[in-house]
Image 1 (cartoon, helix red, strand yellow):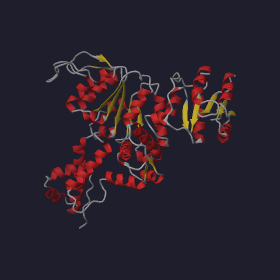
Image 2: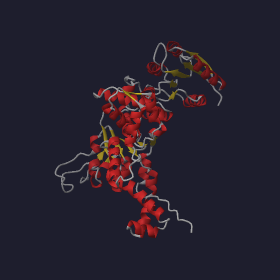
Image 3: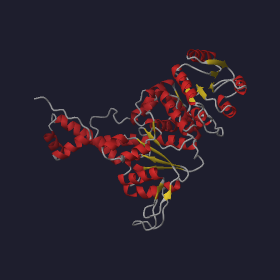
Image 4: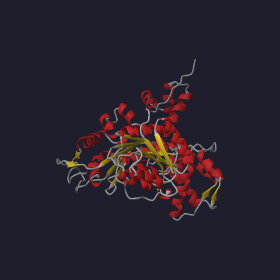
Length: 480
C-alpha cells in the first residue's frame, strides 16, 4: 500500500526518529518528527497529522499522560504507542487510554509500517475513556515479564479491557492463568464488581452443578438450606472457571445454556435467572483433544474459545527470570523475610533450569531462599543445592527403596507447589508417574512381548493393552 497522509512521530531518541521517519517516507507518507511531547501537542492543537506515533518516556511529559488529551482533542486520529518500558502495566495503560496499538521496543520496522497502514484504513478505533492513573511500579504489577512472548500476551489483554468477550486461557500449571484472569477483571469495565474463581478439579463431580448454579432447599439429600452458587456470587462481575477441562459432561450442558441464552436455574428450581457475568475459563489440557475423545462438548468449546490466550511456560521466557526474581524477593521482604540478592552466576543457574513447575516453582524457590539462606547474597552453589533438592531425578543411592524415592519426590513436589492441587490430584499424579515407566520397563525386559509382560506385572493381557494405549507407550518388539 502506498502511503497517503501525514504521520507525527514523537520520540526523544534521535536514531529512532530517523529510522521510523525514513521507513514511513519510503512507504509514501509525509512525516513530522519531534523529541518532545510539547511540540507534538502543538501540532495536534493546530490540526496537523493523520496519525500519531509516540514514545512513553519523553523529557517533558509522559506519552501516556498525553494520550487522553489527544483522544479528546482529535478523536479521529489513531495513536500508536511505542515503549522500551515493556511491562504489563504499560501495555494495559496504553490501551486503556485510547491507543490504537502498543508496540514494545525493539520492534520490527516493517510491522510498524503495517500497523500504520491498517490504522489509517480502519480510521480511528473508538477506544475507552481514559481511566484513573495507576502506579506503574514493577513491585505492584500482577504479572511480571518483558520477554517477546509476554508482550504478545499483554497486547491481547490490552485489547480485551473494554470488552466482555469470553476468554479461554491455556497454559501449563504454574504459568499464572488466574493472575491473568484477575488482571483482565481488574482493568476491565466490571472491575468494581465481584471476581469469583472456581477450580473445577477441586470440586467433587456430583457437587459441581450445585456449586456453579446453586440449589434450593430440599433439592437433594443434605440440602437443608438454599445455596447461592458461583454465578449468583459473581453477578455483575467475572466468573473464572479454572481447569474447565475437568468439568463433567452434564455440567457442560448447563454451562452451554448459560452462554447461549444468558440464563440458568438453580438445582431443584424451575425458575430461570438472568446471568450477568463475564466468563473467563482456563485449562492446562488440550480441549480440542478432549473434544476428539468425546470428553468435552464441541459446541461449548467454541463458545469458550472466543478469544484464546496462551500463556508461555517459564522455559520459553527465560529472559524474564531476573525480573521475576526481583519481584518475588521484594514481596518476601515485604512479608517480613530478610532481604536477599542473587549473584549473576546464581541467576545464570536459574536460567539453565527446565522449570517444570513454571513461575510457581520459581516463586516458591525464592521464598525458601529468603527464609533459609543465612547470607544476604545468594550464590550459585546455594541455588544449585536447592534445585537439586527439587529434582526427583537427582543422583540417589543404589539401595534407596521405592518408598524412599516416592517420599523424596513428594517432598520436592510440596516444596515447589505447597498445598496447590494438580488437576488430577496428588494420588493420581503419583500413580501415573509410577505406572508408565513400570509398564515400559516391563515391556523392555520381555523384549516387547505383551503376554510375558502381562504375566510379569500380574495383569490381564487386555488390561495391559488398554494401559499401553491410554498411557501412549510405544511397544518395540525385539527382532528375532
